[in-house]
Image: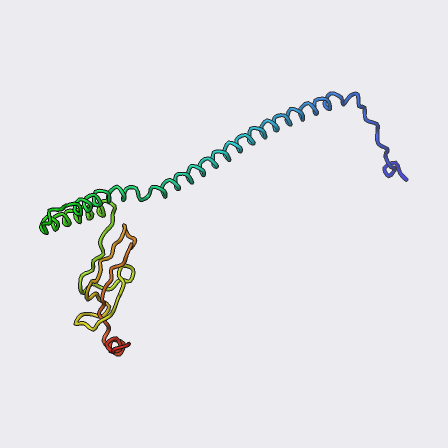
Length: 190
């Protein structure tokens, strides 16, 4: 074997000469660990505060929703109190005058219409010939008529809507389509 091929034995390391960098390494690691631990503690604190704030926000929202549900009808109830007072006054009137009673009912109806208007309740009262709308009208019956099929012939009872939502559909009679289906509606017992 040549000297290049001979195995080399590890040379002993002088630990005395390497002491100063190794002594600094644990101090630097301890300082880095302390900084990382402080940062972790700060982040944990921020997380817990954010979590608590989110929980408080959720709880407040639930409380406000519950309160809104509980008092949702309060405004409408306040609007209806004068109507009730007027009806009670009409019943308490002993004068017996039909004209006074009629005038009182008209004034009470006016109060009720005002309460509906302030509460955004609108009448659904289609006119004859208006196209039947199943989302706003309820067909009670179909009849042969001299107007287009699927149009309102007669309003039996007004409907009501709150904003865009139907509270009660208008009950209507609808013009029947010409043909055998219309003839079957005319037969007794059909």
